[in-house]
Image (tube, rainbow over the protein chains, first blue to last red):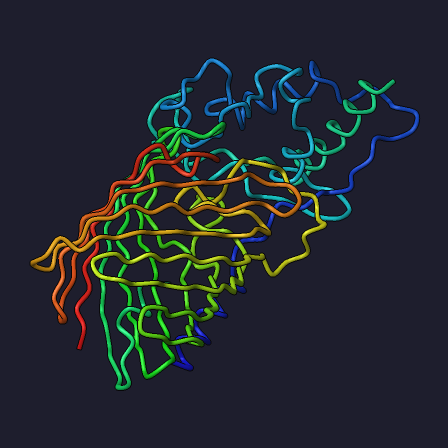
Length: 139
Length: 234
């Protein structure tokens, strides 16, 4: 019984790093170098919208939660903190929970290829861009 | 929990069990189904008992199929009050995060769940009830993106009050029919959950088998779930 308990405790301590806010901030003044047109749309298309798209029915989403759609800036701004905590990088954390290891080769298709992964710089840009977009909405 | 007290004896008793289940769910964020198998081991000695169980699942969530273990559970139970018709006691269960939180198979943290239970029996009727408290052993003040009740296979709140009630009637020849309800009420943010079910069981002193059909009444635990369980006692 002692061995079982120890094993379970170890298992409980060895889970994947949880989603963590990166604490990235938008430079002041906002240089407007990272925008939906210059960065966000291309990033989402390359890494996210094969599953996270509002056009995909639940059975086509390969596990992506409903209402987690990144094919428009409006949808992204529904949950910027969530995106930051799963895929962004910043002073407080580097989150690599998304993209997963395997992806569909066409939106909504079967999982049949390794997912392309953002570079560290792209993850940092993602978090800064999200921080800037949130500030732009608030202004 | 309450069912364990029904087999209370002065000697020791070892019980092995297997439960299989199939469910469909439709939450705000996920639509799908799961199938699970849960082997369990229980031991009773006098007023005290212990149990261990872990579920293995196949989960289909928004078109993604995953296999994996759920959270493992260890529990202890003690009978505090013992009368001819009334038994009551306390229990303490701990769930360990052996299931993947990211795949919606586990909570992602240890849960502690103390509770109190009571059973009253006057043949042919048996009534049981329990009330408890469940809490994730993590900082509850942290930012938490809400995906609704999690995990999909056995949803709970980070901190909640739990409750259950059951009534069974002996039909003779070892057959029993009954109904049960159970649920959870969040403390702080969360979702109130309620499940109702009907159960048909057959048993002897050595072996018992039950079939239960459940519906999710509140909180999207599942839309419908079927459970078949059997236990062999030594």
